[in-house]
Amino acid sequence: MGTAATLAKAKYNAKAYDVFSVRCKKGMKESIEFCAKSAGKSINSFIVDAVVRDMNNFKASQIGRAHV
Image (cartoon, rainbow, N blue to C red):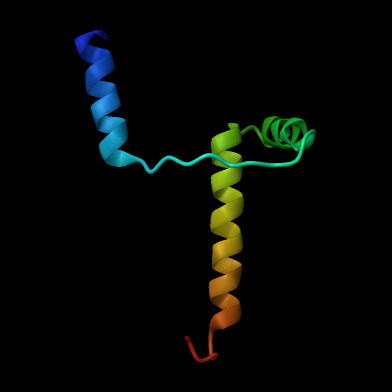
């Protein structure tokens, strides 16, 4: 069983974050790691930033269109 601090961190993380895994083709992970490191980011923040940027671009492209 974990320490009280470990259990507290796990409880906080479960409440504060959604977790999911990303699958990519072999070799892509190394490219993502290289790009993230080159940008001075963790892999997680690199991927989250890319997703948010793409979502913002999608939302901007939908302005003026009828939503389904």
